[in-house]
Amino acid sequence: MAVAKKKEGEESGAEAPSLWERMERPAPAPRTSLTLERIAAAAVEIADEEGGAAVTMRRLATKLGVAPMAAYRHVNGKDDLWALMIDRVSRELTVPDGATDWRDVLRSYALQTRELMLAHPWMAVMPTPVITLTPSRMAVAERQLAALAVCGLDADSVMAAFRAVTSFVHGSAQSEIAVREYQERHGWTSGDETRRALAPQMVYLMSTGRYPAYEQYALSAARKDDRAWEFAFGLDCVLDGIARRLGI
Image (cartoon, rainbow, N blue to C red; front, top):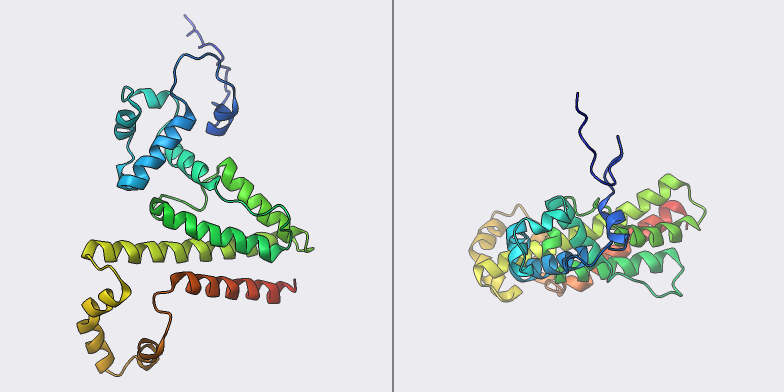
């Protein structure tokens, strides 16, 4: 019986190298100008300009000026593409070298992540945005986990505290992006304009007398449209809670 000849470099039972292993390997020969870096940059540009749903392999090929199947020689599909995009934009997240206190490190990353997501709103609707494993995201997590670890906490507490902050950041930013996109779809350009448009619904709901606490907020709040202040306040509440709970 004839035995199928293995392709060059193929080993029996060996798994294909990961996307990141392939990315770090030097190119064997300058056969093509298409690289993972170019693919990532083009995909991010498409998503920023047209939305995440516009990032398809065909649209990407058109932007790169290559045949539709060319990109598949570099990425296995949409999951690889999302990962490349997340990794590329996450490189923007840094903290000053002198920052060592756990609270300063986590707070800096949290504030930057909000700004990053607002600048790239497709991150809010990307599948599994929090658990995508990429070198840049791992570097961000490593810095925060290391800052918490030096406080003498056990490994479970370190991870739970890190995830609590991460969940707040992503949930808050996703909510902010959703509201902004809702306003844009309706052509509302400000908080006041939005409230005027929704006034009939709000007036009726308040007239039922069932929501006195919310009515008090609506009548007296002075920072209704200050999303940055609201985010920073909520973040500090989370950090205060971690500090008190863990005694750090």
